[in-house]
Length: 158
Image (cartoon, rainbow, N blue to C red):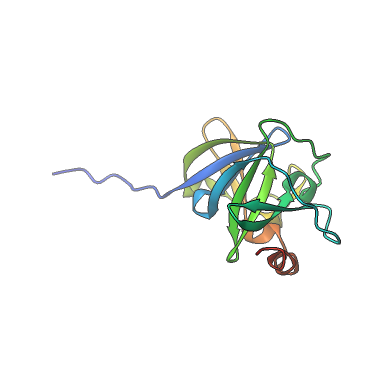
């Protein structure tokens, strides 16, 4: 008779970096990862909204996570990427320093975040995943933007 092993639920996560910290978002919410490209600025938008890009014929709003989380000056390199994610039936581009990896993490390794992690408010976070050799800050994409910001951005998307 086969021995039943405990089944650990895992989620697949894209690991990316912002200012020497590693963050994760669930692969299920990621549509694509793009190289940095020309962004058209949109007037009267918050400073973290960098503008829009034309992604395969679809106008997609783009935000800079470093600016959103007040992590310092924006600076783009060859490794800078735009992670296209789904937020409330809308696609949004997130500018990150680099997209590093895709990993499976056990759901039970994700703990509630402290009030502030790396200068980022806990409300933006799903939790902190404790992995063997590192901590991974898990973003809650539904909270990174407020409802008002999502509505404003949906008017940019075409």
